[in-house]
Length: 353
Image (cartoon, rainbow, N blue to C red; front, side, top):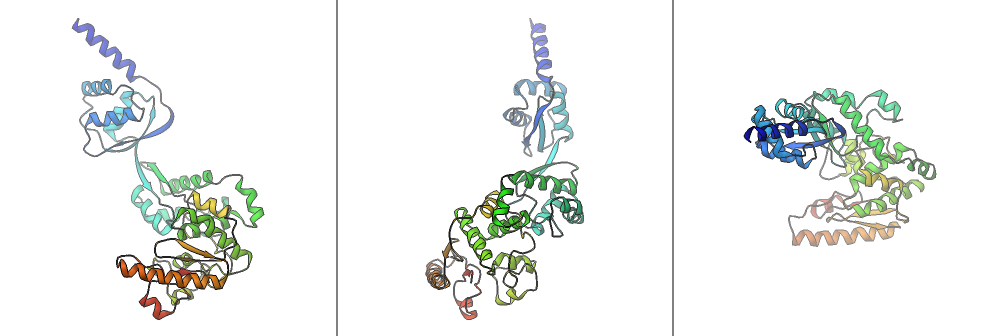
């Protein structure tokens, strides 16, 4: 009877271990220090292995349950168990994951990619200046700023900087909806304009529900021929993050200085996410021309300059009270319209003049 049991188990192992890879690759994480049992449970949860107990028995028989390599794997359902064991023991199928947050600029993205891919930073810099990609996407600037879509990516071992950047650009192209193209004519803008505006919205908005309204303010200012006066463009023009915008910063010579130059800047200042792209192409139906940021992150929107000036005074007063009662509350960025002495003594306020 014992030999019959052995034959039955061997037959089950043979049948279960056979298969043919199919479908999209599935991400499976094997944490550092995981036991083989924990790894097999992760494979079962991902649908890669249907019978984890039999899989563990096969690994024990083959001696492949002792030296698995931790990491993130991309595996397909139906992969033969022997191939899965080889992958786990040899590190084949390992991928490097990286998350690009919404609103990150190339200056923030490029070091992340270099570290994740284990490639020189210069190779990433070259990839984001790929002239073929720039021409294909009809981008007028010298880099792919704004077109590396923010998301979590899993890059297989050996992925080059050019391949990674290409995948991120393709992710942007999948996000761009075909029906948006017809909106461009109605808005009298092109796609690069929309991505540029979306990047500014991404940097301005602290609350998701305000994105379409912030978008409307900028659309309205463009139609009226007003300066956008978007503080995030000053940060981009300076080439560095600064905790607050000072009067001297507004004098920076750059086509991205929207306090000096009318219209949209030449290109995006960061990578906008899907909601900001939607807001840029579908602004709220409001007539606001001004907004001011409070220290709690929300904005006060107004239509006339007189209303705006009044809102600024209210926000400053509220911020001062809030700072007095909670000294740890951070101050917003300085406003162009704030007096220098007041900027030093009171809560700073961002606004559109």
